[in-house]
Structure formats: C-alpha cells, structure tokens
Length: 448
Image 1: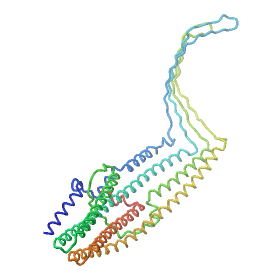
Image 2 (image 1 turned 90 degrees about the vertical axis):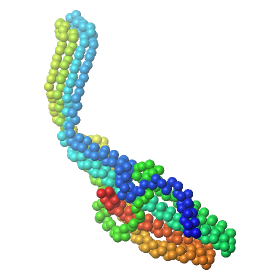
Image 3 (image 1 turned 90 degrees about the horizontal axis):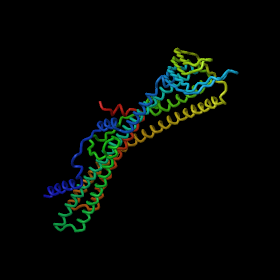
Image 4 (image 1 turned 135 degrees about the vertical axis):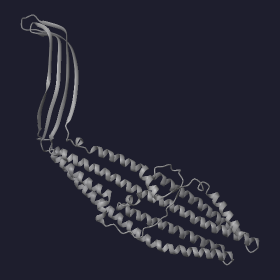
C-alpha cells in the first residue's frame, strides 16, 4: 500500500513541477548541435562575409598590375560675337558665331614599373586573404568550443535535476514513513512537519535548478542561431577522454590559427616596409589615346571672307612617362621608420601570442590532469554516499535513526552527486580547451 501511494504521489509531483518539459522536447545530439551551429551561428556567418571581401580584394587589378582604360565623350557649344580689327582697315564684325565641338576618345594609362610596389601589394593582398581564412577558421574553432561547453552545460544542469529528483524521492519516502509512524503512535506531529518542510525545500531547489537548465538551453540556442524558446533534450552524456596527451609547442605553432594570423601580420608589416622603401625608385608609365574630334564654326571670319569652318581629326597618340622622386620633405624616410617600428611591434605581438597560447595550454592540461584525479575520487565517494543514504533510509524506517541524521545522509548524497557532475563537466571543458588550442575540434566534431 505504501509503495503504491508513494509512486502515485511522486508521479503527480513530477507532472506538477515539470509541466512544460514533459511535452514537445525534441532530442538533440551533440553532433547535430555542432552541425546547426556551423550553419547558422552569426559569428561564423559574419566571418565568412569578411573572408569573401578579402578574397575579392586579392586581385592583380587591385595590386596595380593592370592598365586603366577610360572612355570619354564630350559635346561643347558656344555662341560669340566676333569683331576683327586690322590696322586702318574697317573692322569685320560677326554676331552670333556658333561653334559645335564633338570629342570622343579612349585613354590608356599603364604603370609599367613602380619600384616593385605592385608585386609587394599583390603579396600583401594574398596575405590578407589568408589572414581572413585563418580568422574564419579561428572563429569556427571558438564557436565549436562554445557550443560543446554550452551543450555539456545543459547536460550538467539536467543531471543535477535528476540528482535533486532522487533527493525528493527520499524526502517523499520520509514523509510517508513519518506519517505511518504517527498513525501508529510512535512519532510526534512535529516530525511530520519537519519532514514536510525538508520536502518543500527540496521542491524549491528543484524549481531553481529548472531555471538554471532553461537558461542553459537558451544560451545553447543562441549559439546555434535559432529561436531561444526551442525546447530540446540532450542525448549525449559527458564522456571524458582520459587518454589525452599534452600538445607540444611546435605542433601548437603549426596548427593554431590565431598564432598563424599573428605571423601573417608580421609578414604584412614587412611588405609595408618594402613598399615604403620602393617609393625611392623611379616610376615608368605608358600613356596612349585614340580619339575623334570634330569642330564646326559658323559663321567665322577668314581675312575679308566670312564663312563656315569645319575641321575633323581622327587618330591616336602615345608616350612614356618617367617619374623620379628627388625630395619629398623626408616623408619617405618617415614612412620607412614607422614601418620598421610596426615590424618590431608585430614581432613582439607574435611572441606575446605564442607565450599566451603556451600558457593557456599549460593551464588547460594542468586542470585536465587534476580533474581526472578528482573524477576518480568523486566516483568512489558517490558510491559510498549512495550506500550511506540507502542504509540511513532503512534505519530510519526501522526507527533506529533520527530525522536529522537521515537528512544529513540525504544531503551528503546530493552534494556528492553535484560535485561529481561539476568535476566531470570541468574535466570535459579542459579537454575541449586543449583540443581548441591544438585546432582539432572541428575535425573531431564535424558531421560525416
């Protein structure tokens, strides 16, 4: 009778506390979450757009290799009053002399040699394109790491709800046992009230934990670029890879996209220095045009004759333009000095980033090793706490244990479960960080 009543009450309690979570929860695997994030995450999509711009900029034309060709067409009209006076001869006057001029031409300007700056510019644009690709790659790695952490956070909060529900089950049994003891006269009313107070406290804790779970789901949905109110149930559990080895620094240098971007920034600074030096060299250009010109003037004075003047020209011209810088007010020297400073700064920034990443890797691996040791300890500790809680409940049922001692055993079990859940999550987070620094998350978690 007691077992049936307890089961009915527990089911009713679960339905009361979890009304919106009992329905409309789609299962969500970790791989599916990563797939959605790679497709819809806003940071990744914005990085893709920036990469497209860098790719479009890396062209020969943008570097200055190709000529500029312009087409021009003009049509001019004039209306003048003309008066010619030659010594003692009477003046010749024409009112309303109109001119109609049409010009059409194609102009070519082509820099043949500019001290090598066009080659430097093209190499710089290619470096910027690669930097954009590395930025996208780093964004993807960081986003996948955030999705993994957010997904496992949902798993963690879900497991904590399960632990609290186990504690509520014990509290419910305690209430039922105390009620039966009171009915047969072996327990006081105050024990029932105390048991109900503890039971309500556990229910309150469950409600708070449900809020934490909902917030974790909202955070994950935000990273996935979808409606924050989408409800789901995580399918995967937290499984820690216990065989992970520390990544050596040369491998980190070869694979980490952020460090590679700093290396490219140093290369770009060197390109800027070479471009500044190239300003001291001469510039050779080729110019040419092909044009049509027609001029019609009516009337016009030719000596003593008044008539119409029409002229037409059709042809082309070409030439070379050589420009040699002589003195620029020390402007070139200033640019070279600043470029040298930028090169030195970018080298320092590269070394700083290298040191930062090595430090992060060392911290992550230290935390990972420590959490593995704690994980083994807490797994054994939870087993002991569960056994202690089972024994305490049975002794309480037999009247051999006080309510305070049962409550303490119950709380010890809950604390042990939560501690194990937290440590497993922290170990997984450290594992994720190591793999992020070594640029292996996307390959490992990408959908086949």
